Length: 444
Image 1 (cartoon, helix red, strand yellow):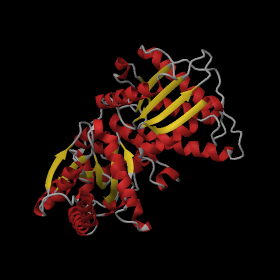
Image 2 (cartoon, helix red, strand yellow):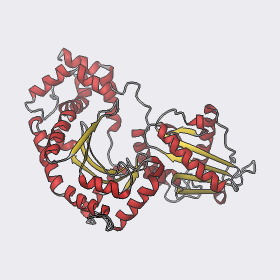
Image 3 (spheres, helix red, strand yellow):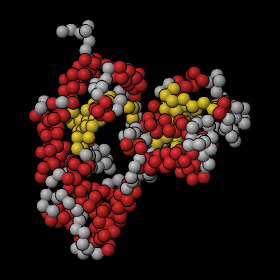
């Protein structure tokens, strides 16, 4: 075996990459089919369902008991007073609300063993904790206290993120990691008897759900740049593979020692990742867009392998001014090694976020951009990642397309698809935004 290739497959970073790729191998998952895997609101729906003792899951108060126990363990670890909870829960003593005063999940517990009524407000973030999340939770907490302090003796806010820790406890907010939720669901699925007739279906559903949660709930990587450095440090052998394949379509030869055979599938995946150059493609698309009269700007968060390209034009500015809120709307093109994704989202500032998002969502639900069933999936109309309203989401190029196209043709194909998008979907949405922004009382 080539010494450089041997060094690659024995590199701890490659073994880590191999482990991650192996974990991703899966077959059918309904969340993937419905494209619900990444939406924050869907995960809140599942949690609210599991928290209800009389839910159709048939596990009674099992999840609620485990969740509140974990909550108090985290409270003690973080120096926050624990909440009084009963040893078991009766359905009539438990209330679960979604989006009450814009809180993701509000849990009402009455008749606890201490005689105190408890309100637990859970703000769900399927990403890492940031300071803005705590500010958002504290704003909601204040509103809840104003309305419910007379009836509820204890009102406790909870921030749920993928981070193992956060500074939420400094403000009296209990922080819970999604990894903890994952452990609870896994334990329940393995140990509980599902009493209803659909028990096995529920168990299967939880299995599918665990697959989805485990994708984003893993512990944050100690070295977020390991993938980038892996590609850079083994550029020599990866370039050699690229030259052997002419334009780079294909994989590692089938022949070779057993050690190579063990990792052949992962090597093919790494090779396909290497042959994509999202940063260069971003530059080409940016130049193309500027030629079409767009203003563009870029952003790459530290430790990410995604390259963000944002664009704006006059009609977007008109919509922003009409709504009276900055950062509305935002077109983004997200370029990665495995996908080029077009997305339109509304990003109101935190303090006035929900009223503006609700107003836009109400208008757009009554007046859809494109009501045709075959294109409806491009308009998810869903709130995700901190309350941003995504109204258009479409892969410009998928992983399969990027892997099958020769390197020399990827840029041309991407620009052709970008031109087709501007002439069709973008034109439709631009006209829609102009209608949304129209103000009959404004000067001509």
